[in-house]
Length: 108
Image 1 (cartoon, helix red, strand yellow):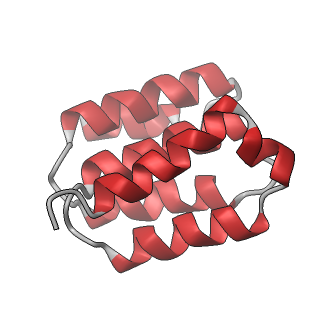
Image 2 (image 1 turned 45 degrees about the horizontal axis):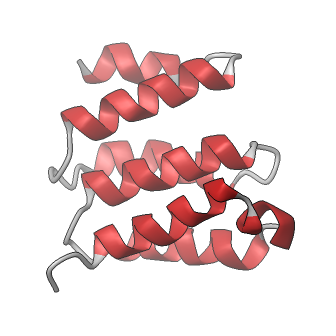
């Protein structure tokens, strides 16, 4: 399953990437798999990506690493919050980044 979804992360369309991210998050929720984290973090930190894609990638990290306090994910999400434009973070999609942070510390 991982190979099928990971191939779609390189697609041209953001909609295909979002679909693959949702599939990864549902399939590997709670697994804390570092190989997926290493693929998703660059998508979050790329300032050329649309905030919609970045927010879904954030939720993917939050679900995969739920309740783990994963340092890599935490650093990526905090960097995202510090580097993104205020208008991006004020959009409805910006709230997903806060939700992803909450998922990392869920139950702690």
